[in-house]
Image (cartoon, rainbow, N blue to C red; front, side):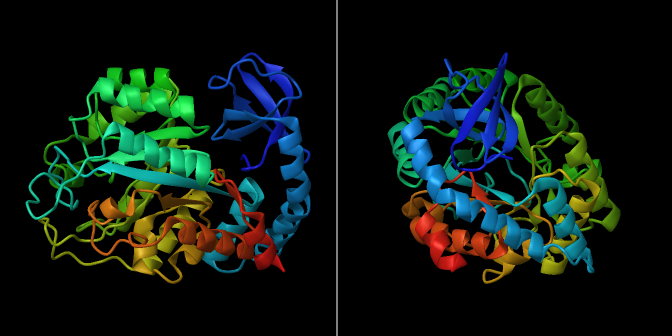
Length: 403
């Protein structure tokens, strides 16, 4: 658990630093930021130090944050102290094991071209009605620079379809340049590529991978993804974790012919894969796919999945996906967080491209101004007593909400 406020290094042991936040101590790897010493002030995310900050600047931030820090903790404890329903029990376990931290990652969808033909996905190869787009290297760097250096994101997911137009050299250049310019933890979500590709990206500074397995049922997987194999994907996830990557993975809820036991098995598999973050969202049928006529899962089904995942894996970081928010655009995020989740993503794709990443219809947030979206997310978190992580926090928003 790392807050998007500076921490002070109080110990160094090889490649691991001990970082202090108002008396709470967390460990973080120092691979990405060399030449740190005891007494340095840093930002750390996902178990990695991502940048240093001067002591004067850090003290200014910490001074302003101190009162809010403990006030948020008290609000969270108050909202979690009377567990009766399934959701309340899950939320209480979340509070006990993960505290009030809530990861907020940015996500940049840089291409909707895809070589795959998955039966559930709107950007599948055979969707001829979709307008395709690709961001070039400069557009990606500009978008990341804005998200990191202007909006304050400390962790970003770079996501695309399986688009081999982005060669190993292009991807390596993008990650290398981001690390030079931006103090941010980089996750990549580019589908199945050679392990050598991921090794080059790790060496360039990427430290996380978002790669979902979608279902633990091998037969169902084959029907959904006719040009892929579940075994191959699981082997890749294991190899990437061994390589040193943080893993975000998970599955779809409400797939045709999916049974309750399949969901429980998928929760178990997510944990067994050593996921840094659990990502599971509702299956939302897309009209230009073979599953266009399938039924939509209920919000209750999704919330039960979050709660069960929390009960079985108390230490997990569990994501409220955009797909869940799409089921209930007014209240989905709040309900997900109160059912045991503690992570969110905010779309930082340039607005002119956002609608075109059409993996399912009517996605939440595709028309939202990013600054307005950040403001609404922060207000929600402060009302729930959650401390935002991976995002430089607007104290003005906090003070207005908590007053």
